Length: 200
Image (cartoon, rainbow, N blue to C red; front, top):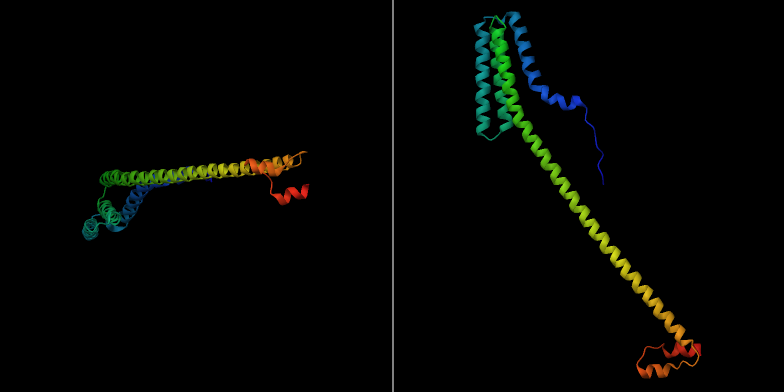
């Protein structure tokens, strides 16, 4: 009935919290590598990233209107990543890319915190529901155990009473001078005549 308690490793707990920072840092590193390989001051590459970022943002907006919040958030994240990549790849210094990286990391944590809160609420609701069902089942089991115990006790008491009554009738019939016809005439319980006549 008791479920085993599983201790989670600290990396399992910390990995989702580090995912937004890892994602934005990876985008920044790839954009700077792209910058070193010919994207610096390349208007064509910057325009390509701008078009892709705008397309991803438009896709996210249309998905949000269609009632797909997870896919819409994914579209917005892709749009932000493409915009960061375009700026970090085009610019010649590190100050603007680092500023955009910090801003995108903060925004990513803001969006992720909302989903983490919702997941935590869902997990707490699930645990509360499971706990209530477990308590309800335990209560039903206790009531059924009490009812079965009471029925067993009643049956045991009835059997003991019947045994004592039969023993009393047998003992009374064996007494000297016992006249079962006089007892039956008086309306008191007596043994059947065939069993009494066998004993006399």
